[in-house]
Length: 90
Image 1 (cartoon, rainbow, N blue to C red):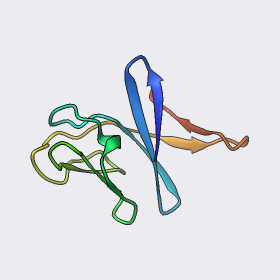
Image 2: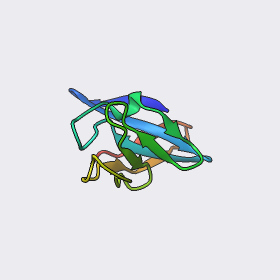
Image 3: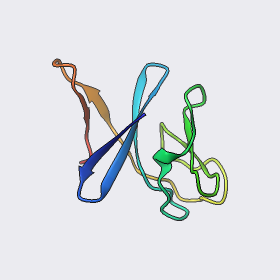
């Protein structure tokens, strides 16, 4: 996982799940906790919020159980011809 700054006070985590890259906002939809500080499971492609244990699917941002019920933003990731990883935050 790599945490990147995409704007003032805005952070995105980029994860490698089995060779595929996914980007998700670094904010739990339950209480704005820092998702990227939590554990993550590369095999299941999910991250766990360190505050209350909500799990999020890295491919969709969908919460996988309470206490979070709202999804978090995900962003397209690409690798340029120059080998640089780019996140499109729109």
